[in-house]
Image (cartoon, rainbow, N blue to C red; front, side, top):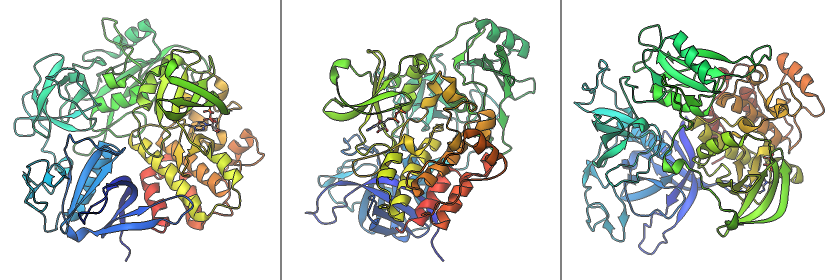
Length: 618
Ligand code: ADP
């Protein structure tokens, strides 16, 4: 029987320096964890993947995060360790969520092993352990090892709502809603989704918490949410005793698109989101109105929460934060919390790192034109000694106010399979976006110019690259909305990266944003987007199926010369794109899964990534 793949993805591995003289380096590797081994291989486009190493899970004695302030000399900044036989393997993840996912999975698979009782929480560097200064690499660790992942421990039963009764032995667990970099000495940094212990919640602005290293400090109370219990008073968006009628009056009076509030529902123990919109109604009428959505709960224990789409969140503040950035099934995104005294806040968040990198015009040198797209001209440029691509936005084409708000979110998305946005230059008009330079241009042109020369293995590698970038967006609850080969770019070493994510939200021109209009990407869109503009990660999955089709058709245009209306008719009749000549049956089956009529029947990107990886001969 073949081992079952549990997890895979690109991580950076530090050389193990098993011999004293072997070099110290950091290399990107594609890791696969299955039920028997942890394998890593080198993947380069145009070449067969080469297996570089394999660790039998039965030899693993400890898997744990490395907590350090030693500078990390590679792009991925979240290290963890795998101690097996007598060796330490240090692996670096791109973000904390990714690191926790790997640690959790590895711990789960190795929990029956002969494990260490103590481990080293910091690195072995320059002949000693950073944590305890011991000088023998195999010296016993200095911290007790817990083979069960903290996050997966069974929560204790939920206690009645109260500030003083905490499920964890007198202390309440809180989760960071977003990252926080303190400016003051007595404040503590936060990492999104990380858990902390709440020590004191008496102050109205800042609460005292403790991190897993034992550091205690203050954080803004709206940046954290209780893991259990519902105490939302501190959030601007919560109006406890507001009736439906009063909420409507208030929201209509403010008249702000996306003005919203969360209030107690008439059904006890439930909550309702009320939101104001001027968006066109079913008959295209533009009547201002208020819509109410009850926050739904799953029947699991503890319950998860969701709104219009079935995106599940552990807490209501996480759900609200998500919908502040994504309409995802709501009539409009939740833009401005409205309170009874009429004040509203323009900002979704205001941590210092939420400010995007403002690029000064004098730091930017512009060169020759690279191409032009729907947003404007793209030129080559130089910024801080780096070659960059500068997108000069067409004037009046996008909502600059909204865009500036959202660029902060986009800039927080870091992944090796996403084209990175370095910053925005708003001091010149039109505004410019400065991106990582991608030497080989857009994927659709790349495919066309290499027709007849791309092997099936290379094509699979391209699909895997795009899928990896999309799996990251999916895990960040971010919807692309316009995934297509023309919106993927190819790097110098032929790696494919996803670009232009979320950009269509800022476009004013109905021709691009209304599915009935000529410039809408109908041929990449699923039925629910064409019918009700219902975007989700599952609508991205449909588009990904079309991208796979484009790859295996060497950059041909889907549905050839058929008009958008003809395509819609054929989709309604249940027809789909035909199997590309160059696609193996197994890949075509995956495409068909992406084109399931109902979004919930389509696989997630995480599942697609497993399935595609299992097709590549590692
Ligand atoms: P738009 O988003 O306005 O539609 P595109 O992203 O399609 O524009 O860019 C137009 C062209 O500019 C692309 O086809 C590609 O050749 C070039 N280009 C865009 N971004 C980059 C980049 N980051 N690096 C190199 N070339 C790029």
